[in-house]
Length: 81
Image (cartoon, one colour):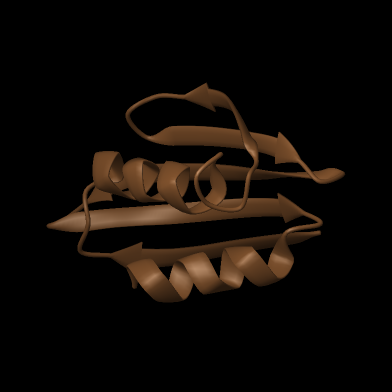
């Protein structure tokens, strides 16, 4: 289990869009259980990933929580930072 935070120049909506592409059915194959402008929640492979993004200055702050997908969460944060 891991919880990580980062800041990025992307908007919360763009972060969620990229998270769906990265973790969702066309990426790592997780099922999208919840999605809104600043939140996405995925399940699959015996674990889950939760993405929460909020506007901050000219970009966004993003928090990710993972159970069983720690490596992929770190890779996603590298890709959006």
